[in-house]
Image (cartoon, rainbow, N blue to C red; front, side):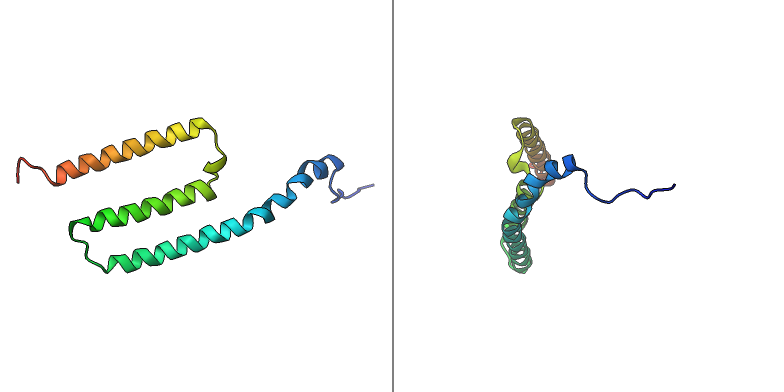
Length: 114
């Protein structure tokens, strides 16, 4: 009377997911390369933290951090396959963040008080 549900896939589900099964294995090598690049960049960040660049310490750290964040966004967040609207929002965000950095710079190195 009480029949348990079947665990066999429905025919249409199998057809829907079957063409995309090979896509994951194709991208694994790229993901591993990006992961290795991020590990190398992290080691480079630690190495550069012990070096003295004078007033450029923050700039060097921010450039390396921006590279790593861009790599993560482009590969792991799949921005490489997005539409133009995403890039417009991303460009606006970068301009806004640079503006905030500029305001911080102006507040830190105020030429009127120095």
